[in-house]
Length: 104
Image (cartoon, rainbow, N blue to C red; front, side, top):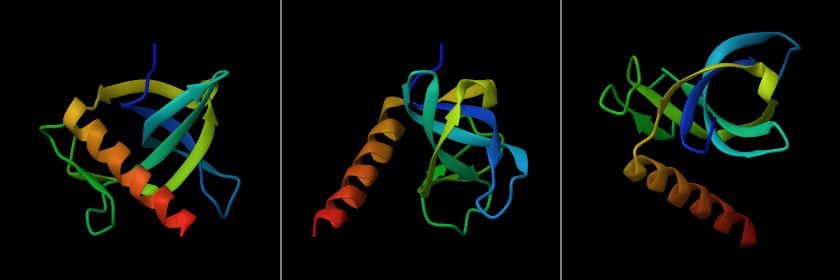
């Protein structure tokens, strides 16, 4: 069963095309077989939460909290690994900080 904090391999649609590619993503939450996820990239020069081999990543990566979207359960190919509580806390705190910026 998939849960918040799982990194999954999923069919991700790019914003500027209808094409999908298999990409890793972090599950933020699930509701009615739809998952809100954050994108993951191996481009470590991008802004985000770092993922290391110690975390379970195949290679150094970044969780992109500026790239959040919803996918259906059917788009998820398989789970890859789960984040440790410390890393989940980092993600949560960064999301809360970004939402507070919206409030002004």
